[in-house]
Length: 511
Image (tube, rainbow, N blue to C red; front, side):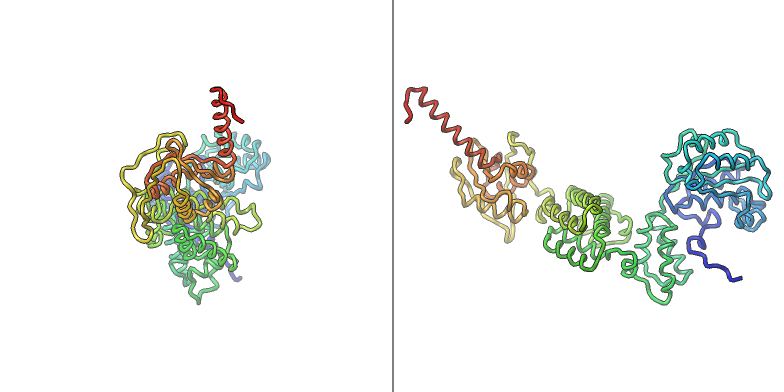
């Protein structure tokens, strides 16, 4: 009879502890217990999917029952007991708690435990998705854990440890299974692709290792899609196309445009990617991962995840952006990603995210060296302002002569128009909020009068940036106050009323 095809994750499932990747902290303890013959009656394996919980449970079942075990605690894989477990003996029972979660299922286990084993020394129950048991089933199972038969071993596997009662946890040896590191997954995939004659590039394997998110099973499931392409070279572009991902070069290109505040090119790039039917959520997710890697590199000097190899773009962006600006970009992209499933056209959410980033982060000439940026000590109108002793130097085409305001009571409209032009270059939001505005000086305050009251609150949030730009033009570190035209006109009327009242009190008649 012709043997049936085995999928990769079953074909390459580890047979002994040495083949398990990324869980050495667990396998070393389990082997020591076998060597010392100090076997517990219940174990709890906790970890994400594909991290090796069920695989280690099966290997452990072989090792404790092996007739001629290897000195290191590994099963021999050749004896009667090892072969019986491979052939699904009734002495080792695997139960899916998701579909067998009732009290009656636990009672059946209790009844079976009273019978002697047929081949193995220990009857082993591997209960997967253990957290799915009902409350009644947990209570019934607790009785078996309190008074277990001497030849019974329970291995309880779960991905949601927080759902398991503490009374059960306290009666088990708990082992935490971690996500498999990207580097180890990459080496594992490279070994298997070589054995299976899959002609795939290292960049493509790196992408698969990252997508798998620490799961060996997920990584092998993805790799299996390329088994039929044995005579062709599988590169990063083919993996991206099959998985619906955006090319890393597109992500890096977008990251550069964002970092340089090139909002026009950002929007054009998104339009181009959208025309090519690229997944906007995946693009946003890719950018989040990239800027995370930028932040980690900036702090530690090391590459993480997909960028565990040297990446010149990432290195340059980490120099260009301050930690504060990276956090601003990260927060905006994260919020956009969370909102994408609530909107009909996700590209709109991403476009507005880029506009928000453009408004939030500082211009390039300020980002290159954060120490050159004058910091405002206060954002409130009535707080004490810091007087700068040295003016900020400017070079190149952006250099402008300092314009001193000689008359402290009147503010030259030409100077204010020049300031507005500079502000409009910095952010499009100023184009709207400061349109038709004017300014005057009063009691060492620069009073900026805007058209609508709603613009006052918006501009207050940008107070440090406004103070810096205004200082560059007039050389005076004024306190800044924003008022609407309506409030300003009321103030003028109130001043006139006060003058009339003062005159009448002095006996002067006003006609």
